[in-house]
Image (cartoon, rainbow over all chains, first blue to last red; front, side, top):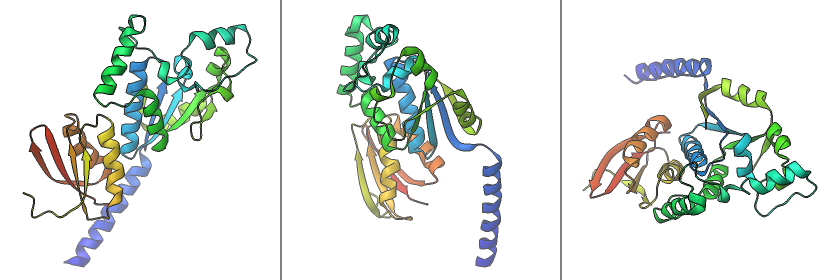
Length: 182
Length: 80
């Protein structure tokens, strides 16, 4: 009996392997365009969930998502007027992100954060740490950095943080099973 | 009682919300050898559907699910 089973399993394994190679890789590529707290939370829950399930995850931060990666403890002097303005008006890091609805001049967002803390849901900065632990890769859009006047030295110390353009994202996306835009 | 299943490790995931139970079990399963069983106790309602989905994609097996009030215990065997 045993030799039969072994041969069968070997054959099946070979077939599964070739199927896996031909198809898309077990990767998730996600654009984080929004800087809203609720949307960013969803992005990170999906990213960490996917990583926990064995997927390779790449997040591409662009536009309003870019300021979420600012380190509140760092600053970047020497910006021009537009850069300084963006720097002041946009949230300084994930802890300052606002809800997309019901922000209510800060009351709504505060309420949501308290609600999450009360139900033991990780905060956005905690989710970013978790993502780092799980090996989620983050690529920041150079164009957005440029337009909004952000400097690399004011960004978070995220492991292997990369700066890239759209081709980097697209190349990853093309080879991924799951592609998302938040 | 689960006398027929030998639990090598128990993970207390109670009061943890999405995605933490998932993250913890994906790490926790690596702490036992292949063929051993982890008992994960969770109170997160989302975990009821999440754990079977995780088991399927990670290639592990849920031997048994036990419900006690709003706590669910998953007996998971590491297959690879």
